[in-house]
Length: 291
Image (tube, rainbow, N blue to C red; front, side, top):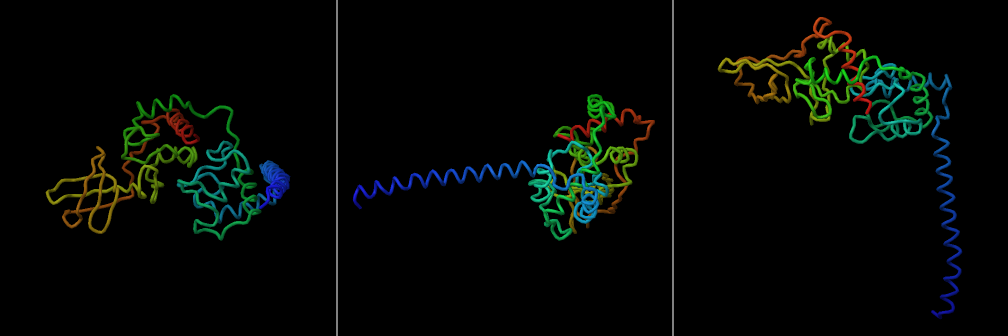
């Protein structure tokens, strides 16, 4: 190819390249503008949209987040103004659409409930959640710092429960409980621990769902082992006792084996743990769960 022709083509390609870069830049600016505009729910403050969102929420979300969005065994309380994974309507839209990797939050239409929601239905759910939000009180109901001291000190909670990697393994891990359950539910689980014993509670520190069923086994030698079932099949069972020792038992060699949904956790009535102390402990757990 003659050098003059090659030079001519290169000169012609430069303006095209500049035009392409300009078009791409304009497209990126347009996308950013649209994203900024979509940061706010287009159906915000629409009572009809919120009412429709309530219906969609019951079908698709209430199993984990509870009726009224007050939180359940697997999903956080969404009525709180401060949320762990979202700060804007746009972020909430993305979470509902795509889920949260590494958590129990599935992508839209993949959780076996509902049939997958349209963008409008997702915005309706967000309108409903916003309508249910309870603004954070000016002052917390309990003393967070004192609650932490009680949890690891005089209340002895950490003997069985772990928070942020510190504490015991006998009871449920509580790092996320303040974000997934209401204040009233946490208080009730302390005052009446057997009332809502979790079915198949999945924890980040365990590879399988744990139901925290109470187990009493009598070995062939007459030794009694009491604790919680960690893992079980048709032939064996793993039991953790209150000293956190794990026993692998063969069922056909046991003299007796009984399971109960009465919690191993004792009832903490107001004579054992005052309302003030319990409020402080709950305030601590809520502060950790909101991180």
